[in-house]
Amino acid sequence: MTDSKFPKFDRSKLKLRSIKTRTSKEKVETFAKPIGIPNFEKFLDSLPKILASKNLNLFLEEIAKNYNTNGRFILGMGAHPIKCGLAPILIKLMEEGIISAIATNGATIIHDAELALFGETSEDVAKELETGTFGLTQETGDFLNEAINSNSKLGLGEAVGKSLLEANPEFVEFSLVAKAYELNVPFTSHVAVGTDIIHQHLSADGEKIGEKSYADFLIFAEQVKELGEQGGIFMNLGSAVLMPEVFLKAFSMSRNLGIDFENLVCANFDMINSYRVWENVLRRPGGKFFNFIGHHEIMIPLLYAGIENKIFDKNES
Image 1: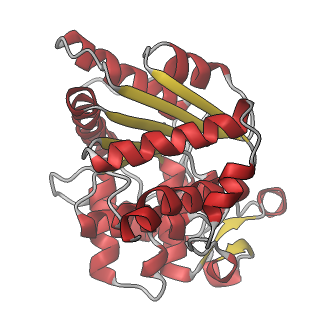
Image 2: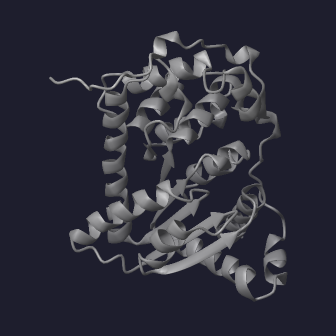
């Protein structure tokens, strides 16, 4: 086998440090609590029947209809919602059978695992760059790369979820990926090599990362196929590039098989409008779509309260 003629960075020279010496900006005690709100229907009804508030009520109706007809609901997301303390709400939506699959980037797995293991996450990047310690937390790299490097045929999300459940750390209740594995909800991690802090570590194995993340792409593509066959919702949450691109490729694979996605509903929740979301999630797939711009830490609890009202409060009454 011919080796590269270019020199490679020697990771064995890197100095790792413990998370015990690291300052984390986010801790589990500040996270959201998934609660319904009494008489929330009156609030929803009080909103003007115009633009985003009108569309929020329409989207909630689509979620309720999807739930009552056993449709699929795939959540594609970036890591920022985890850092915004929304894991408890997303876990509750899985437990209640609203969310049927989750697809993420590599950073989401990292923040999720740190929260489960240590109850905190999110470095002060600027500060750590000054000291040369950014991303070089021993425990994070060791745990995640060991899970990824296992010889199992699991996808990357499955491998991490299984490892967290088996380790049963103190804060595992806050782990989206562990709960997904426990509930048999497909949780896929679509990694861009070199974007995640664990890739800096000597324990990172590019072959295993690629193998397991590609397995996740095929798992995700099958979930998208079922979305077309059964009808349902794809919702993008805080991913401006990666998940819209992955979704479009999986969508194209299903269209190649003749699946028409006649009953597809797509939605986007993010803090900014972005080109790839608009094209790949909202416009090109061709179904109904909704676009909501606002802070995740406000919009997702609001959405959750609306779901509780539209589905579970009415079912109980």
